[in-house]
Amino acid sequence: MILVDTSVWVDHFHHSDETLKELLLSNQVCIHPFILGELSCGNFRNRKEVLSLLRTLRSIDQVLDEEVFILIEDRKLFGRGLGFIDIHLLASALIHHVPIWTRDKSLRLVAGQLGISY
Image 1 (cartoon, one colour):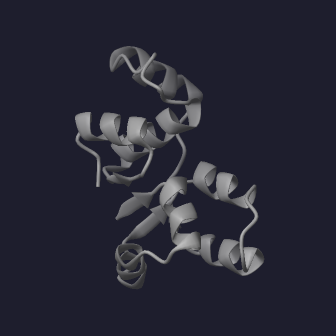
Image 2 (cartoon, rainbow, N blue to C red):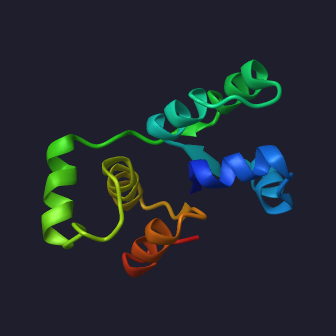
């Protein structure tokens, strides 16, 4: 399974991504509630249908905020250009042993350092 970040989805909605299509067809994509939430705030073509389809993807559980605070301190993730949602995604990916596919430079860099970048 691969956790596909909001940045990849947004790009895919504008210009179809062949790799993402292949991963979807082979049931290799999972989603996080925060990614679904971010996408729900967007305005894109076929929004209702797309969101309905995204809800059918395997969802990985979000971690407790306290676990995120611990990860921030233990891995020194403060001051690295990451937001709270980014670190929530990292924590969930670490716990569920899934790589993150993102186009966000800061998130991709840290995911790589943690060994969970796709």
